[in-house]
View 1 (spheres, rainbow, N blue to C red):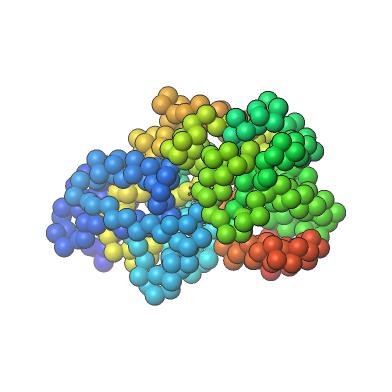
View 2 (spheres, helix red, strand yellow):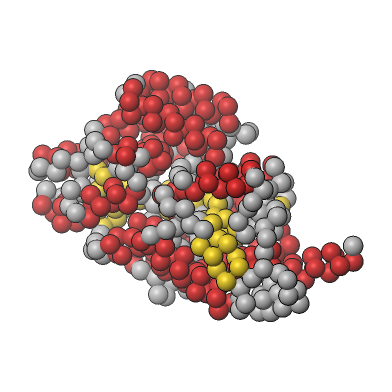
Length: 416
Ligand code: GAL
């Protein structure tokens, strides 16, 4: 009993965890298996930068890469669920701050990290709103590495210039006009789009424009009905936008849709700001960007965070990983390479790309709304139900069925 208490205190203070590499316990495994979906491009570059920092912070601990490729974790989440179900968790896994961890928290599959927040001083350096979103019944179960923005349009300026488009559209109707202009100029699919979850991002952005930030957020708390006329309007706009997108979208992941933009086959792509680092890495450093038309000052946020699963083989090494993830140096290294901005408020903008410096400034003043496609607004089963509704729309093309399916999903999964 006393032994358990001593270990618990040591772990909370990070004493055994960092620096010593858990030297006291010679039998402790020294490999930290890190499960993510960051397997290539800017995402892998971000992970590599974090791993380098981990190597410096946690001598004696070795990073083991358990990445499962597929944007937004489409394949990783299922692989993780299988492992968690057979009680074979990795040492840590990537999850979004917010509703996404609900099921694992309810089932006791991830450990309470609240003590580390106090020991590492995280409460003082993370935004209050983010701490609130991470807190479930007074406890916190993950450490955020970053803030990403979802509602951004990325552009290929050369393609736009050829069609005489020189600036961002002021609202959604003006965006439709510019898309039509590109089409008239011979760009077959002006808006690059990918599979289900990328379509959900587009739908969410349109919902923000047509409902406003507050009513949009209410869609995920039960305060805004999915059956109402404003949602019908948004679905109509969404369908119009699909008319400007590539027809093979249902079979493309986001980097393949991004390829259309890089190759000049599209003028625009809606994607989270992991695209900033990826465009630079893949040959379009002169990209343009603007907030989705009609979203005003809304900043649709999501945060990648890391957990300590129940039964993680190397809790000591994982604690050190989590400390690096939450540290200023870790967030500086990770985010400069990843396209996101630090979740911490005390990291200097120096060394960040112009896009990221602009995002840092926006984050301070913008209206934050969460994302369902990236787990801050809705649970995983809810997200899967919406993705299934969008997949059904792709074959049935029935807008009223889509709205009904979205309403049914909300009824089933909303937690007031
Ligand atoms: C998001 C994740 C980002 C990025 C993106 C594309 O869900 O938060 O960090 O990896 O998916 O894969």
